[in-house]
Amino acid sequence: MMEKVPTIKDVASLAQVHAATASRALNPQTRNKVSPETATRILEAAKTLGYAPNSAARSLRTRTSLVAGVIIPDLRNPVFPPIVRGIEDALREAGYMALLGNTDGDVERESELLAAMRGRQTDGFILATGRRDLRPETDRVRGVPTVLVNRRSESSDIPSVTANSHAGVVGLVGLLVSCGHRRIANLAGPQNLSTGWERHQAFRDAMTAHGIEVEQRLVRYCDAFTEDSGVRAARDLFAAEPDITAVVAGNDLIALGCYQVLAERGLRCPSDVSVVGFNDMPFVDKQRPALTTVRIPHYELGVESARLLLERIGDPEAPAKQVVLPIQIVERESVAPPRI
Image (cartoon, rainbow, N blue to C red):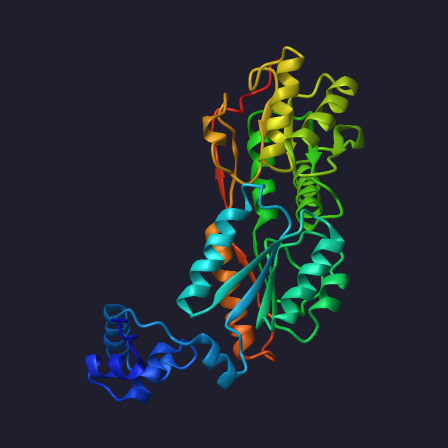
């Protein structure tokens, strides 16, 4: 005999409330119309019965899909999985599902994903694409609530959630200067990406603030935030400028590429060259030496971006918020005073 599927009336009966009250409590968009105590009782009753709301029927009634599109440039980058986890957790609490797309940095792939997601009537988008030029994205998502995560627009009309990259790089440069370094190089990230550009500008600002001229010959621009790109840039840098005493890398992967080049040249970190990264990705504390870096609250970035999107869906005309989360300098064994 087929087991009876629980209904909203069954949930209401168990929770001892009217069916309309149970319906409001089970809908994240109307839950605030029910007292917290009653809502908790109804949610527990639904869990006990194994009740699952009919999202398709609700979509027909409310003309919403309860789905948010999430576009990520590269899920192989250790930065993004915790961001996505934060997005998914926050959306799930509100009854939403994340529809994830990975672009591998390909503009055409991104365009296809955005079009496909719009065709499925997604209620909004969270974009982590890194290009500084946002016009292609904004054209494709026009009229749909959209939030940027881990990057921001140069204009103020799109909500965004970022970490304080500028403060992080300034802190790293300050740490190196306090140890006595003056010949500090920068293996910067791609300048067409917002994070690469912002961190390089912060490097220049910090060096100038400490009275150190930024010598362009001590700067190399990596073509990607990858270890291989870091290797190529570091090889070129040390071949031309072997007397560098410290390197500020655009992210942890570039820093690990620098580690490889130092080993190739018979140099030791930090006794010969100090190296610092950015992101505090998993396992950099297990490197030899453990990498000094900037810790970003990746999971919280995801949570806050989801919250901003839900606010935007609820009130598309509200002013766009620009949320900046704090960072932390994590000092490990990759920094030491320069040899005299």
